[in-house]
Length: 257
Length: 310
Image (tube, rainbow over all chains, first blue to last red; front, side, top):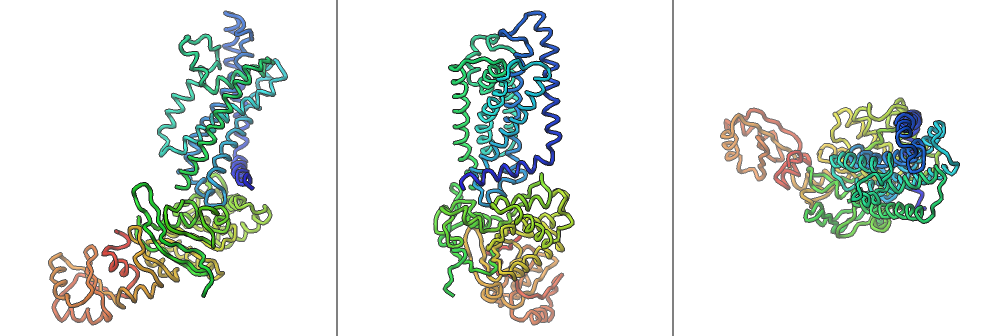
């Protein structure tokens, strides 16, 4: 009974998604192909010529899990911003939901889980595209999908919670430009973090994407490193849990003032 | 007579920070009636409705809806309500019919039941031919009717309508009113807010007049008019303020004179007599209108302001 309304929120999102799933699927497949071809194969070829392997990996193998996790994070972050304001204010879909037996907490939970579900779909498509290009050496790579899900959740949960506290979307562009983009670029996505000036390296540990990228890279390359992996999972779970706690409150305060 | 009221508010209060939106109001809504909150914008009508709809916590006082406490049984109460919010919040990403289907699912209704109910409701609000259309291209009146249909998907005992016809053209308003009559005839209890006195008079069996968070008075439209206004109202407009003041002094013996904007309103049992007297006394207003008193007059007399400009 307690979780039924949350599944109703998901049901609504699936219904909306059915109107545009084709373009999403095509985009989710073409996009990784382009990025991997340009950066992994094209730029990667140059990297390979001039400096050889990166962190013991061919550059294509190095960048594939980076881009995979980064794609999941970026999608999760953007879907936690404008669509949330639309539901709360511009269109009012969430207002309509809470007039039914659905609670604000269920709206929050349903939206976050749907966001994660879309990231998972993107991750699966990414993996297929990457495998076709030869950037996935290990069959353990299937575990990169749950790693992406956790990375997406650790961003979607707190960011969705925060979006519900905003009056308009002006701060969203700031988050997208000054939050998402630096995280995207400097989380061990394109190059190992020991390339960063030493003062910056501790900051990377704060980036959920870095933890996600590390988990993904271990998975696609078949590395087993339980202590570090447990720590990455722990950080991402902690961010998710904290976000979830706050989100049920911010949604309740915003939707039922 | 002794049946429990469907809604009962006692000393019901809503504060947002230091601002008091609803200030200790008392009201009862009985099963089967059409009950209205009439008042200008900012009177506290929407805040009251949101508390009844269990989407806004009560700050102080008592509220019972369908015999339950919204604080502890919000979801159970909402399961038996239909809500038409002031601003259309239809799902713009779905078709007309899908809007009804998914809303039924929010109430945990079985899919097959929702499908047949949706088709029945689309007929009822005359939108069956637009079932597959997206929502955005619909006219304002159609969106409103769809919102009403959506609110009926769970066969509610109680339908809450916040400003149901605000922003609609006269023809669209009449179509909405006509559907609401039908519902009332079927025994659905209607609770609505409005700042249109004609809407209140047309639809409401009983209403309360709200102003600045308080209930000023309540009763049937006829009772309220009888209690506060007179049978007739003579509306006069003058070419200049001087002319108007002159007329005001000459008509001082009428117990009820009100000015509203550039109009002078004379409340009297016999409007024709006033008109005759004006002409014999040589007072020539630019326009003169004798009409029956309305709830608008009641509001003006009680608060000194009109519903539109208050």
